[in-house]
Structure formats: C-alpha cells, structure tokens
Length: 165
Image (cartoon, rainbow, N blue to C red; front, side, top):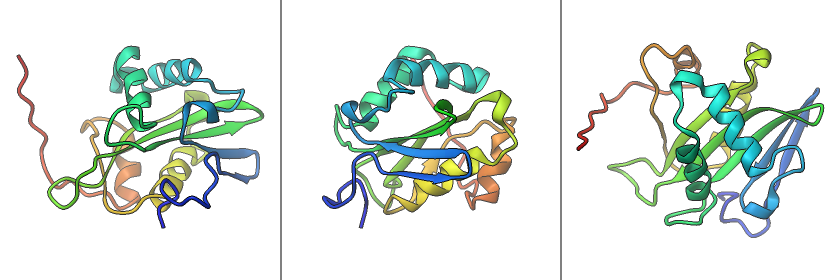
C-alpha cells in the first residue's frame, strides 16, 4: 500500500543508517526543526544551482507536493546528517495513470560538500519504494545526475518539448 494513503503509515516516517537520517514530510506541520519550509526552499535553490528553478517556483512545488493544491498528496523526503540538511527530494502525485506516470519526481538535490556519499541514490530509492505506479523526472542532458537516474533504472523515453508565450 502507498504510505501516502495508508492510514497506518506515520506521516513523518524516517529511516536511519550510519549518520544519515531520511525523513518523510507529508504535511506542513511535519517539518523537522532542522528543515523548515524556507530552509528547504533555499537549500534546493542553492544545491540545484543552474539545474534548478527560482525560489518562488521551488516553494510552489512544496505546496503542490504537500497537497495544498490538487491532486496531492506527494511528499518531501529529507536527508539529515548530524541534524543538518544534506539532501532533499520533492515528489508530486500527478493524479493520472498510463499516458502520464502517476508520480513526478520534481527535485533531488544534495549539498555539494556531501556529494559522492550516495545520498542522492538513497533518497531516490526510498522515494520510489514509497510510491505506487511509475515515476517520471526531467533532467537536462548535461546534468551529472543523469548517470544516477540511469543506474536507478530510469530510461530516456521521450524528448520534452515546450511551447511558451
């Protein structure tokens, strides 16, 4: 069963291994003291660097993932080490199936000083274990994280095209 819809699943379930603690955040009141919404927004903005979005867009993704707007709920998965935010992942439920995957992995970021420890992979694997259905993500061709996603089993199925005014 999907932990997001399972009433027996704790809203802020966390897993601990070595010095890294992964914590799910499924509502605004479930943020740990080390990582309030503003801290997470700033962290994602800085850690994503040129592969990210502006802070207001990132903050909106948290609102969408935590169910303030349909189709919710998604979740935020935090990686904490020594009570410090070192990684974050934002997953959104699309409310669709088949023609569009059920889940959209919006952001995965790891503190630049902590890269190479497997934190991004651990965040992705834990997030994918907790969802039902397919997971889709967008990654730029020159983003070094593309190799991680390929190792995790993501395949390049389509080229994304956008039209903007």
